[in-house]
Amino acid sequence: MPTQTSSFMDRLIHFVSPELLLFLGQTTIIVFAILGVAAGLVALFSTFGGKSRPHARLEAKSINDEWSERKRSLESFFLSKKEWKARIKADEEAEKKRATTGTSKRRLWVLDFDGDTEASSVSCLRNEITAILELVASDGSAETDEVLLRLESPGGTVTGYGLAASQLARLRSAGVKLTVAIDQVAASGGYMMAVVANHIIAGPFAVIGSIGVIGSLPNFNRLLKRFDVDYLEVTAGEHKRPVSLLGPLSEDGLKKFESQIKETHLLFRNHVKTYRPHLDIDRVATGDIWHGTDGLVVGLIDELATSDEFIDRARLKEDRDVIQLNWRPARSWRDRLEQTVEKTATRTIERVLKRLSH
Image (tube, rainbow, N blue to C red):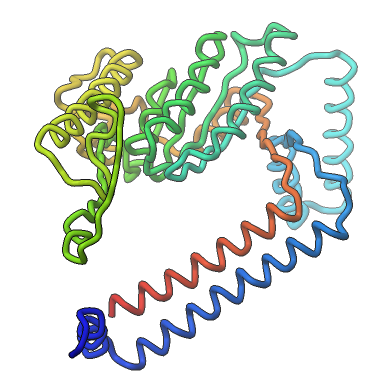
């Protein structure tokens, strides 16, 4: 008499082609092989590797100098040798004069935030902002310096992006003007960060808004019951876990879960209203997304412009020193190896999912 498991496997085999099963098997072997090699390398280097670890560092790059070099490279094609030497000499004299007189320009600090679902870049952002605040506090340049954050993020966890927004609020509290540039997307948690800025710019087709909250959780309780599997979950506190992955769903639990989502949305609304009080919050806090052009009309942003336009204006028209900061966290060989393995495994799984979708 066939068992329930064997009948299920028979149905699965009829449903899935032998070629696909072979592909899945090969893919699984490759993934485990990669993980096995990685584990072996970790064990090997743990035994024979040195004890020294790389240090975190802050990198500063002058965008003015970078663009001057590019301009010089282009000009070298059109100037005579005599004109080129005269140009180099004039630039050197101007730089020497500036160094001897001690005159300094207003600074524009450029930071980048490429957000994932966990807002993991917040640790780098925290260190970059701390460095700026320490400098402006020591030389009294808080009122003249400005920070441009080039922000790209579709959103993610409330905790992660709430912390990132709080880091940006440190700049405003210190009196440093903050501009956020959205070239492509800053939605949901991304817009939670952007709204802290004194000034928000976005490209015409950039995606912004999505002032809403979503909570989702799969529930496998009916599947467990189907296979006669008991699941025990003991909680203390009426609302400790209103819904869970494996426990039964109750009407009271679902109501509490919905209530928590609504409370978080209210916090999001109030956060936006605090920094942009002129907004019609009922109109924009619906979870809808807006493109830059429409976002300007409803007040989600202040200006249609790209980050490149803003930086060019600061360099050429406002004669500012534009400095890009990047915090490089300490990454050991093990961290780099784990990241490589993770990326490789992710690409392999994506291939499987792509194959399954056809």
